[in-house]
Image 1 (cartoon, each protein chain N blue to C red):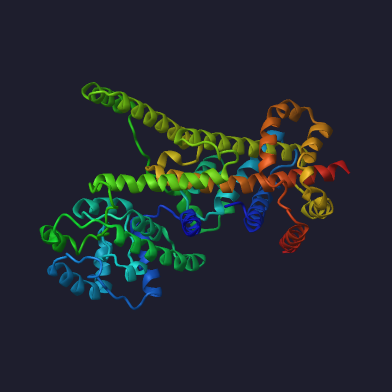
Image 2 (cartoon, rainbow over the protein chains, first blue to last red):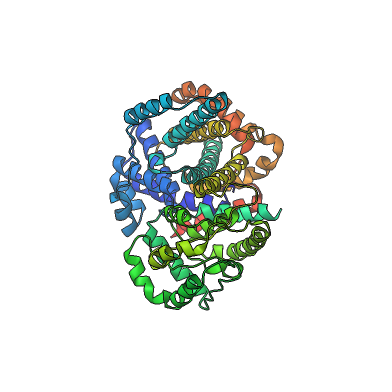
Length: 180
Length: 335
């Protein structure tokens, strides 16, 4: 699934709305402030495209709400804002030390064979990678199973692609404008 | 080819999926099913030739009152109307939560992977209109795959009578997906559930392979995950970089959309040509005056090259969409 033009339009609309909120506040502020404004409004716009159906979008909105509550409330109309911001996502707690220790004990008891060892190593590697993916995707820690994680990643990638496409075209157009 | 089509629709269904609470999901699905399938017909026997009479009788008496039982069922997390699967019935399947399903598999010994996939798909459906067409395609393929399963399926090993008492007790609270094991594979419920899960994961990974550029040759899970992580990180860095560039280009955050779009339309024909993939990149390279960005800029170059080759360069892949977008945005601005 590639980013469709309707998605891009919607994203652009929402993003512009967010930027409108910032416009009166930012007149002669620094580049970093502006960048933050742009990025935050773009993130919220991207996440709001999914209307709270995906885990990553909710986590992303919560994350930006911690940085700029006002913006999020303004950008998301009404009820949704309240529920999305205040909802606490269930966190998958894994006390890594305890888990590691118990795995070591299990390993000592198990009889080893070459094939098993290789399989175990491969599994460990895959688990490490999925943990890495959880770190990258917003809200990954809350996704308890792998299938959900991969689904969310799919959706997240498509939304990121939309965001990048729109932003890049705006940048190119703005530059072309400033050069002429 | 068929299955590919099915998978594509599956993906879209899953892309709309959510992890709403089990109650919400069930509610939505029941509404959907009640709306779309008012004539509910339980047709058990064809699929379960060995099922005990009590089973059948139980279900027959149970189902007509399914509507009445619903409020009770909502009280419990695991409540769904009990339905067994049969080819004609697949469309009226009530959803389960995943946990529930795997729990039920322990008490039922018949497992069917493909059917489970379809059922999982139906689990995830929120009543969106776009999904209706896809659902009809899905149910067709579902019935076809079930036919295949029937031909392939082993005879069941455990008698239903043993489970019947459990079933009657639980029937009002839990739901069962009767599935069959594939030919020549272990019938252990755990391994079957695991296999279903693994197949799901590998199916999703295939979609990811299509999305992430340059992944056609990578075959392991670990390698694929690596690529995915790198790609997501590069996209995120691109967003940051682009926002920084935007911040420097426009000091007042007004992008003059109308201006931008009129110029975009003019330059759109240029961007359509395949060999102009590079120029914006080079434009950015050469003419950029600000010092602040230059230092960070070289760093980002390789990434941009990677992405420009894969992404269609601009959103305006044809001039038509550009003009359409232009008018759309202008409407926005007149409001």
